[in-house]
Image (cartoon, rainbow, N blue to C red; front, top):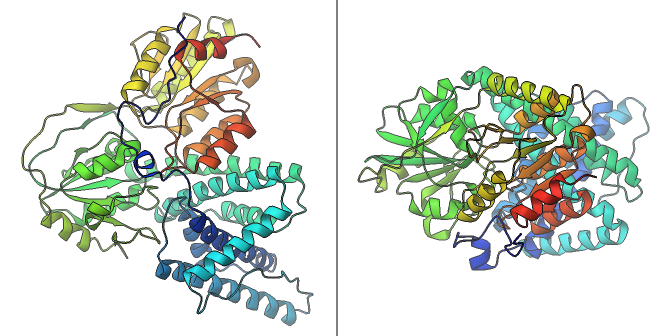
Length: 538
């Protein structure tokens, strides 16, 4: 066998990556220091909010601010001085209000108040450079107090907490609240206030928060279907037609819906991008005639997709993407912190975005690129998995694979074409991307559907344990939301997990390395070597 080819799943074949061209391959020290200030506010605030909850007090406005700020802690977002001052002032105001209310209630009820010594200085009259120095001091203090294992877990905790908050924001927009998740996040943030927290306790809290994130993901999927109708098989056009246009990226379906409502009868076509392709499968969203298709090749190549799009671009909240200065004037977002030059949408007022689309060139001619089929019929898929479970129980299938949604670079296609050719009659693959039309591969034509993976594993493990099943999961796309799902499958007992490289513009490389090291997540090498390693007897 030839084992000389190294299948690095991303950034090959001339694929454009901002990190490679600009060297932006990690979070900058200055940004890291600013994040530390914000995290310190959140940790201190969590202490007093939990004390207030013990007294039966819950401030909905502060809760909303906390979720908004955490979900906006995108690894590579850049703060202007004005933006950072706005966020820190908000948190300082909330912290002061929570402390004052707590001490007032303790005094009123003749209770002994507990006090947490603050490590923060007032943000008033402080420049960005002052805040950076403050963050540097906070990190130095943390590095001297926490063990390496604690620090790695805390960083992974923030990734999962951010994932939870992103889901909570969308659930809230769909009129669903989750107090349990909010309180769990506060408890975990408060745990980070102490250097003395036992590693076992921190590990248990981390496991619980990962499981909670998956419960919320399931709830979000259920709520989406209640709101927009049960998912139906759909052929999504990849073609374009002459007209003004808006490109919508991200995952927030409610914001897409609001834009569709705002652009009715405006003679503007709406195209989805990246994960937003799933919107075409929901009947109530599909019913809008100006939701005409999907544009671009995916989240990993958004820079070239954005540059090629001749209209306005709407990044729904928490889209995790850096953008080029050259075309920032045509991009809008609902994020609390928007990069300099990017327009903000407030109170669902899409007029600036609409005007930008009407001013832009738009598509001047048709281009036929065919279509992609999206088929995520859970009943049919889970019925097939039930049949597979019976074959596994009889010993007819010995190796079960899950292959995630890929970015469709030439390297990936070559890798999985060779990989799938290696599957024998005793193998079965649930694939979200590739198929050779073999009888032992079930193709789910959709973007990553993590909740479906968990349902499939649940069916398969009704009569056999996860250890006996020994599933092999290949994550083929990596971003900040993928990492919590990798961790959850690990906690379910899945030992054989392989993942692609992460674009550093999407995920801090140190987080990726910590995940790999702590949880034994393997990287791809070549199909033959990987397949041999995956299927060898323990």
